[in-house]
Amino acid sequence: MSKEYNNKEEPYDLLKSAQDDIIHICDTVESKRFDPEKRVGRICRFAAESVEKMLKSWIINNNDKINVFGIHDLQKLNNIATDADSKFSVLRDRLINLNNYTPKFRYNSRFIIEKHEVKECLNNLKIVYDFPLIKDLRNKINMENNFNELPDNINILFGEYKQNAIKNSDSDDNENRVGMSVKDNKNERDEAEVKRRYEEHQKKIKGKNVKSENGKKKKSGR
Image (cartoon, rainbow, N blue to C red; front, side):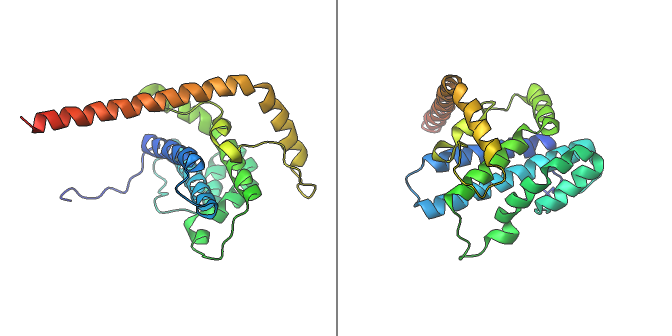
């Protein structure tokens, strides 16, 4: 690589990569190539990485003098964001949970992840994704670059790990989760339509890639 490596991260690149991580989650949920144990690890890892990039994108957009390159600790990133805007403090507990799946913690062969933990992890991802300050930035950058491929409600992409009512009397969040489930069920038809359109969009992208590859082959065959 002759070009000097540039470690400066940009809000657009980070948000685009965060979106790609969510698409990887969707693909992993639907994949039959991995056994369940491997699948849950990949899902939680992509969720933590996506949230890391969303936090970094907001921090850098707010103040590009702050260097967050190489920081993977979500609590540390949240402290930096909270110093700039106290609204980020409400995400503290969510990020403590997601921090369990960052590089610092996940390199442990005995680290077993249960299905209910995956649901909690993905619910926390959705909450950060929908967080107003991050959502406003994503909408602003999408207006400029038109990169968003995801439905507004990313919960519908999570298949068997979709956030529904969880029967767990030990959970302090149980009532909130049930309420969320009722709301989601009311919108089930709309969500099915959004998912159908998302899948059609993905097929179109794959079709364009195939055409592009075929075009390259024809040119090289001349």
